[in-house]
Length: 75
Image (cartoon, rainbow, N blue to C red; front, side, top):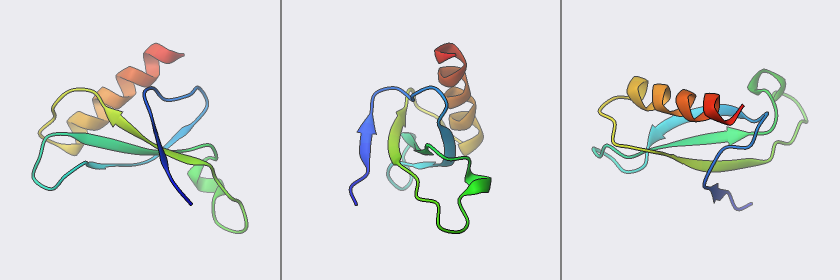
């Protein structure tokens, strides 16, 4: 299965993980899924995509905060 990249997160999707795009760099990406992560155990199949978090961030918390800002402006 191929995971695609989108330029903005769709409404109603969930952040599964936030991670560095490349080791020791300040670019971050988020893996997002269309199913609440708490509902994933079992036979549920989730659609997923990568989202490039805008800006440069020194920490995961900073990247997470930037992602939350992007999501908040979408809703």
